Length: 119
Image (cartoon, rainbow, N blue to C red; front, side):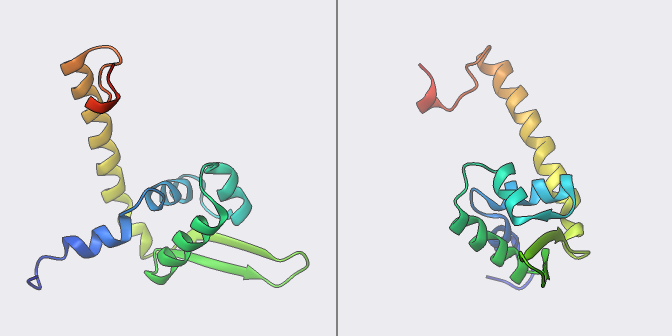
């Protein structure tokens, strides 16, 4: 891959079922504890949430703050560097909304589901 085409690098950070959802929660709510993220994303397993948070932390998208107390307290927030993703995520969300409207216009009420999901 040429040095000017780093699209795949960006996708590595965003790809997957859970990273965009985690980022959306943190962007919307600010700082959140691990248990709050679990409650906000009920379908994610504890193991998967931990893995995804570690990957986002590695890329300096989120910050993990550990408070040494009993019981232990860990909070997650978007880093200043991660804030640069705001326009990208907003654009993706806007496109998704427009795409759903487009599919609704094409297929009508409730028919905007994927072809395999249509009756």
